Image 1 (tube, rainbow, N blue to C red):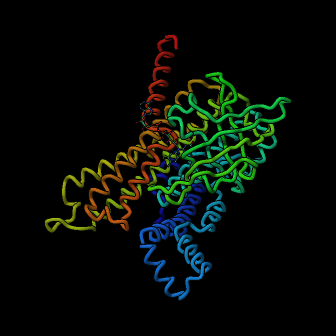
Image 2: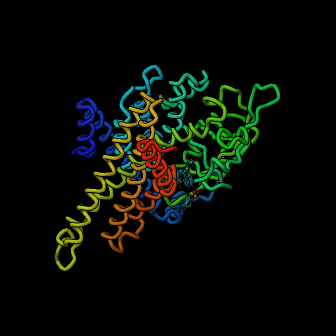
Image 3: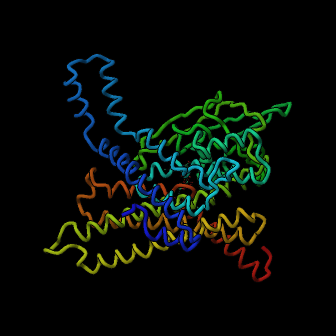
Length: 452
Ligand SMILES: Cc1cc2nc3c(=O)[nH]c(=O)nc-3n(C[C@H](O)[C@H](O)[C@H](O)COP(=O)(O)OP(=O)(O)OC[C@H]3O[C@@H](n4cnc5c(N)ncnc54)[C@H](O)[C@@H]3O)c2cc1C
């Protein structure tokens, strides 16, 4: 049985009727099941085991307190907590990072819903690894639409090509510590100031809560370039190797532990003009467009997590513990929850793939204002729905496990913690709701001929 879900295939068949897509999805699902899932689970086991005890017994076995030996043992224990690099290598070789990009950029030029199906499958096995690529894709997306609009510099194009092939991995640097993430465009403190002769910008500031903080090799950074409330923010590319750029604090977190998370510091980083993406002052527009796409990727990962939790719920209900001599599936309340999750996950998946399909339509016709409104509604509502469904599925999974859900070896609580990534990542529900409401009212007024 394939790790891919039959509903994914139904949707892709409905959209494209093309068998090759299904074969690709099956092949990717096999890779995820054979490599990503075991790698993710091995790191969980390593974290759940008692490292001090392990450390002590290994030291005793070494029969020495030599510093080098201690370091070696420590490194060995640490490496068990990380996904091996060759897993990332294999994911890249699968073509995941190249899928939604034009052939001239080194991409496979495949429909966005297929990329989304791959991400859902990846997210089912490992939210950490899924978000690593989802975030990098969001940055690449910002370069891609600027490239197709003829606004990307040669330097920007070279970075985009490296992101497509997986040579570079990107981080999306928007949020800051001193500001509310939800209101960042108004409160942004990071600044890029053009020098006197107009040849370069100097970038200064700190970005916080950044995914891929340690692993990214390039950063898509939003910075204030003027006080203009509408056109005061611009988007820049910064490579890790550039002077003045470094990873600051790195946070150990409860969720998605295989994804690094922290602060990126920009201390007077000199940026030649080619490092600006698109036009100065259009960072807010670019961020919105990147986030529309990014929210669909988050919705796909959330759907994958919901599906995983649902499958584990079914396993406990049908084959797990008994109460009063009967499996839990025999109780009506369990059946109702299964029906609810089945319906909700189907809805989340349908909304997510439709939003992905609408993205492709919008990319082909970016001047269509009504299409944009419909696309924004589809993308934001998919993220809102899928994140909520993931939380619900994980919550129900914890319930059905009972007390054993709190034991570290049980994955239910980990799934639930991971679901918060999809709640916060790329906007909290209130922000999505504001956007949805604004778009619906805009469309209503347009239909009624009322002034916007
Ligand atoms: C795991 C993880 C990974 C992340 N990765 C990245 C990344 O790669 N790049 C990046 O730039 N950022 C990243 N973020 C940051 C993320 O985008 C922000 O957490 C998010 O935008 C919310 O901002 P905040 O945390 O400052 O919360 P706030 O904006 O302060 O919101 C806190 C709470 O206030 C309430 N609230 C906020 N706005 C409103 C409103 N308009 N109306 C009513 N109530 C409201 C809500 O209850 C909300 O939950 C990540 C966050 C997490 C948790």
